[in-house]
Length: 471
Ligand code: 6PG
Image (cartoon, rainbow, N blue to C red; front, top):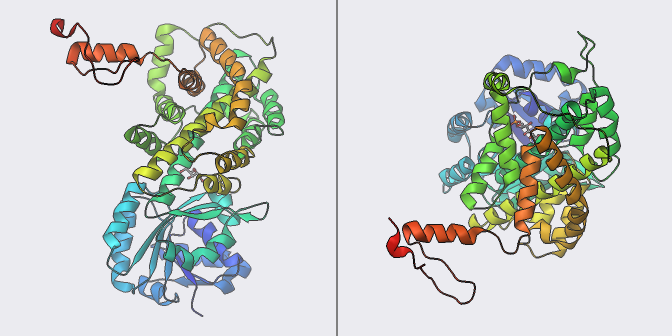
């Protein structure tokens, strides 16, 4: 037999994706640099072995795939991808398609597209979300590259993707880096979502004195309402899990130092490059970096003393916490989609925002009910609109913002850090302030640098009477 598709890299994501492809009835050739891994993978594949061709050399691997050959690369992002492309190039033929399924920086994907331009080879950047379970049973798939190349692999990708009410969570989103860019923003939003949940957990633990076991049912309850989402669901599960060794809640023995592989940071950097505020993502990235500086934090706690007053469980703070999360989430998603909307123009991708919301409804880490509302909102709205201007969201935010305000105010008074929630509140407050304070900044700029300002009463560029005094 000749395989319909090939896959290189049998790590966790790669092997699960390969099994998913085989299970959906597609013959697949697989290759891994360490041959023993290929053998072990094949042995463990059980009944799916009949659909899998394990290969020990790249030559054998390429020969095992029916041309034009689609080859999925599930290897570490960065240099390994460039090395793999170079190793494959002499073995491939016209129209073959390289598909990078890793968490690549979309600038690399754009570069690789340009690099292969004119060689007859095609390059697809494919964002895959959903972790190992998603890869095995249905991820959300975000594709960028030439649409004709996507058509060649569309059926396989549709088959293996997650389904939301029967609709495949996979789509072609635009040329070159579009898929990896959208995956990056997905991860940026994931960072913001996770950080805001962690802040609410912090208020519960340090402000309300709740135990993990008490928190778990609160999150589980929220998961039945408007916050229904995978991340809230797993938060309840994590809080409810005991450490087998000590019998304590596992969350209490996990070190408070978060890792990060780069996608959150790339989102924040890109938002800054585009000049589009994404304060929730920025705050979440900074919070992870601050979490990593545990020694410094411990020294600072010694220097300044431990946290301030404990919050009292009065005036329904748990309901407020739910509202705060909802409001924070609205702001973070509004920002994430605004970044995508901005990039769409700058990179000429014409990103289909409602479609992106739709393919995030299942399979991916930020999957939630909420994304259906976003998809509907974008369908009915001007493409450029910030979600905060869409009527359905104006209604939700109007209701939830008071809760966010109370939570941020109480947390600030108690000395509990809420960087993402407070940034969401400030973003919202500033966004809806028709007359802001940048008039003063313009005055200062003109004073020290003669940068000029606009007036409210007539068009043109003006200087203040101070210009001659500036020194
Ligand atoms: C997903 C995840 C996935 C991975 C991230 C985690 O969508 O399936 O986002 O891509 O878990 O790489 O990123 P950090 O290590 O930066 O948290």
